[in-house]
Structures are given as structure tokens and as C-alpha cells.
Amino acid sequence: MNEALQDLLDLLDLEQIEENIFRGQSRSAVVPRVFGGQVAAQALVAAGRTVPEDRLAHSLHAYFLRIGDPGVPIVYTVDRMNDGRSFTARRVVAVQHGQPIFALSASFQRPEEGFEHQEPMPDSPDPATLPTSEERLRAYGHLDRAVVDRFLEARAAVDVRYVDEPPYGKFGEPREPHSQVWFRTNGKLGDDPLLHVVLATYVSDMTLLDSVLLAHGRGGWAVGDVVGASLDHAMWFHRPFRADEWLLYDQQSPSASGGRGLGQARIYTQDGRLAISVIQEGVVRAPRA
Image 1: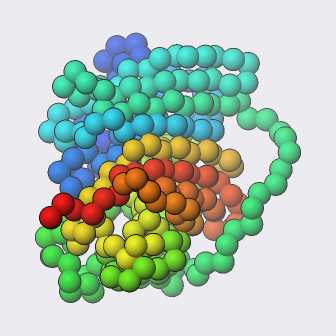
Image 2: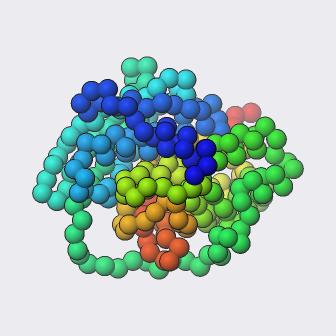
């Protein structure tokens, strides 16, 4: 396990300050605000800490309400909405400066057998044959070196490999609104299923709106031609997986309108099992002149 991954695990290990109340530390993302994936992952940790060990996370639905301040901790309050025979539901609100910045509802289920089918995994190259994020970013002479360093530092805990050029690597002309990314943590994790779900939640907010940018030939924040932020985020966890083993994040955008862009994706294990479905909408605007 590299130091960056250990730092991330420490960041996600919340302090319990009262029954159903937890506190998490904050840090800045590549832009001067709290990374949305961090808040979502910490909120899921808070929910999971109040759930019986035999219940596994199967879905989450969340809204990003305000920009998070990386200079102060975040307090997470958990509402135990329901404890049924098969399902457990929790609502979590993240608070800074006395105001909610994020709200999440999550559902957990006792494992059971049932019907089985899935959409087949799309074709994709072996992740070992793809350049690392550092190899790609260092080769882009049009990107500011400080931006590249900040980007690599923010993602040092996770190995993220684009199948094709990311939006900020090749922009100016519209492309198909489809993007594939392989990812895994930079080090082995323990066997707690919640930990793997939490790490996948963290990563899921990194690249999902790339397909929106591709459709319009935009490079995103890295080149300053888009102003954006996550609005809402939903995930369904279908089958067991490990976040320290390669996962294919197959992403596309069916629509953009009204200053918003929609991304939807499926995450597959390397052996072809559909593990997660993801949908996110975000603000996607051209900067004001």
C-alpha cells in the first residue's frame, strides 16, 4: 500500500462523536473545494457504521447541496430510517458551518439468492497495456505543470487509466460521448465489503462527466473551458467486487441541456461481471466572458 492510499483510508475513517453522529476530516481536491467523491464516500461510511454486519450496501442516492470547505471538518448525522427483515435504510446529512452541504440516502440488504442476468461487458483493452495517468499527463505540453502536479497528487491513491484520450488531452472537436476508464487502488485493501464499496464510490465521481465534455469538444477544468460541479449521484451495487482489482468504468452521456449534463455508466470486474451501475448529473457551463 502506498502512502497516498493509506492517507485516503485515514481520511475515510470517521471519528464517532455521539450516537449516529460522526466527524470526518477534509482536504482540498484539484480545485479549492472538497472533492465530491470524498463527501459521498465518508457519508456512506457513516451510514455503514450504523448497519448490522450482515447487511451489504446495494444502493445510494445523493445530492450535492453546497461547496465543501476543505479547511474545516465535516459532521455527518445519520437518521436510522428503517431496519427491516431484509433491508436497512439510512439517511445521512453532511454539515459544515451549520449548513448542510450534502445529503445521502443508502440502502443495505441481507444477502440472498434470486434471478440472475446482466448486460455483457463491452470490449476494452487490457489495463496493463494502457498508459498510467502520470505517463499521459506528463506528455501533455499544453497543460500547466502546477495543474498536472495537483491532479496527480489528488489521484495518487488510485491507478486510473483511460482507454482513449481524456477530454483535457484532446479537445476542440466533438467526439462520441463515450469514455472508458480502468481503475484500482494503488495497494491491497482488507476484506470488509463496505470498504470496497466506499472506495468505488470515491472514484466514481472522478470521471463520470467526461463523456459530456467529449460530446462538445471541451477539455474541462484542466484547460479552463468549462465550469462544472456535481449535482446528484446514484449508484447500485449488483455483485461483489474488490476495489483493489481492476474495474472497467464504461461511461456515456445521453443528454446535456439547461446548463446540466447527464452521465451514466456501468462498472465491470475484469472477468466480466457487472458490479455497479452509476448515474450522475452535473452543472456543465461555458465560463462567462
